[in-house]
Amino acid sequence: MATGTTERGALTHPDVQRLDDVNRDVLKILSAPGKGWWALFALAAAGVGLFLTAWIYQMVRGIGVSGLNSPVGWGVYITTFVFWVGIAHSGTLISAILFLFRAPWRQSIYRAAEAMTVFAVMTAGLFPLIHVGRLWHAYWLVPYPNSRFLWPNFKSPLVWDVFAVTTYFTVSAVFFYLGTIPDVAAARDRATGLRRKLYAAMSMGWQGTDRQWHHFGKAYIFLAALATPLVLSVHSVVSWDFAMGIVPGWHATIFAPYFVAGAIFSGVAMVITLIVPLRKIFGLEAYLTTKHFDAMAKLCLLTSLIVLYAYLSEFFMAWYSGEEIERTAFWNRLFGDYWWASWTMLTCNGLVPIMLWFKRVRHSIPALFVISIFINIGMWFERFVIVVVSLSHEYEPFAWGIYRPSIVEMSILVGSFGWFSFWFLLFTRLIPPIAIQELKEVLPAPMRNKRKEAH
Amino acid sequence: MSAQGQGILASYEYLDSTVDAIEGLKKAGFEDIKAFAPYPDHAIEDALGYGQSPVRVWTLVGALTGTATGFAFTTWTSMDWPLVVGGKPIVSIPAYVIIAFELTVLFGALATVIGLFVLSRIPNFKPAPVYDPEFTAGRYGVYVEASGDRLEEARRIMNEQEPIELREGEVAHA
Image 1 (cartoon, rainbow over the protein chains, first blue to last red):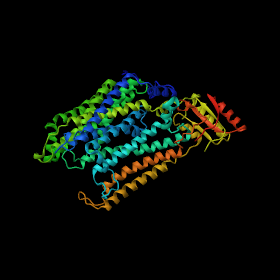
Image 2: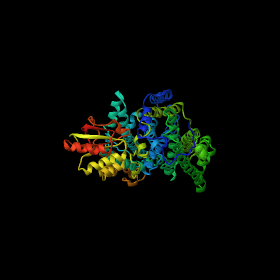
Image 3: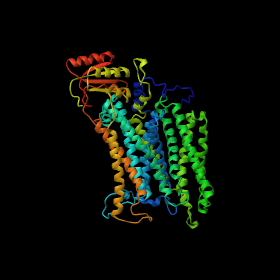
Image 4: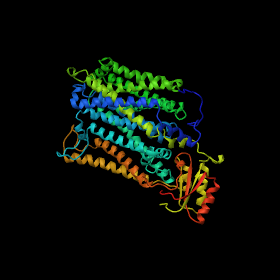
């Protein structure tokens, strides 16, 4: 694994010389998979099996097989829902926000990040359905004219969430698909047989004509401009699921920006977790350079500081407000029954990322991989602390209680990683996981007459 | 611009030759010029004289429809069965802003994509008789519709820029 700290020039991809080199290098990923891919795929498929088995068991036996009970009615399922929605966010950040800001390092990672978004929302979306228990009533969430003329309560954050998450899934899936069209067309032009037919259908007759590119470019900018406020809204709405309630530990105005920063923090970490093996397995060292990892590490560092600030300000406000209930809740966070969850959160999200201040760490891919895993764990525990620890210790001492996740809940949590990886691994083999077309935009255009590089 | 007539397609290795070929053809009075590129390039768009894309109208109309739908739907359903929830007014505009916002983004995004499909004429599965599969890899292309003497003139202009290859035939769609 190249951990090179060699000075590279101003070019984003100095080792990529020609436009068609990109096609050759990226499209070869789609051909024969190695043993490593199959091993990971088998693991992921086993995870899907575990996930479905546990869910079906819960549907047959009822929600009682989970550890959910009074006072903790929201447990691992809601924690994991927020975790996966959060993971999704950095994909849209990289594909839309950094696109609008013209960040020069996003091109080679954005496709994988965007795919991660789509699959993470797909995973997250299942958790409310798992959580409500009776899946066959899930359609009640959707406003439809029913026999009793009842409509959802649009003043409820839970209904906002339905709208936010379904919009987010639809828009990010469309945005992802649109971006893949020119690249799938490139795959079509190199493929044969069944794959060629599949890619021809998926690319819908794309040829890269001037007219197509002209409208495509504009449509892409508008979609990015729509996705940018959307991504900020989605985790804000998720945070209001909590902040609109009067539970001590939830009822805080800081929640929306705090959740959005946390989401980007965890998402960038997950991008690193996914891209390191991708780079290794498919030999993409020329496309995913230390420059990219350095930029992602800096983004992690920035969001880690925002998140740490939010943690500290929550503790400060609990003390400074003089509110007895609030003080108790936060004292309980650090020294109560769930002290280990809070300290895991503070260590993984606040302390470990401090290492990212050092350039040597940011330029070491193994170190970044390890740190990113710590962040993933820390961010799951952050949501656990917010959801479970707050609910376990509300106002009335007689209503305090302890929640223990059941084996079914833990199986579904572990299985959800399998479900997510299953789709992500399929994606790496079906759609070019590095955006061929966008990469070419940052490569120098081939010129016959070198003097005419005016454009 | 249904290009179904006789025409000639040149494949180029370099961006500047492509742009020069387009400019040469325009100077010679050719109108229906189509360019192919592996990525969107402003030099080619400038040479062909593109203005604003009407996709933005689709986005705007879609987004505003979404906003209106969001407010109208939430207000109507609240009035349809008026229930006081949480001591809030029957029609609580601040809460409905969130629904209206989400629908603005949703409708705006979907309208943008539909607009793109309509304007760039995809999906289109008709096979193109003249097409170079290298256009999605590293080559640029210029196609112009012409026949007889004009075809020879186009061939001469295209040849000046040293194309990798020239093909005659027709390009099926825009």
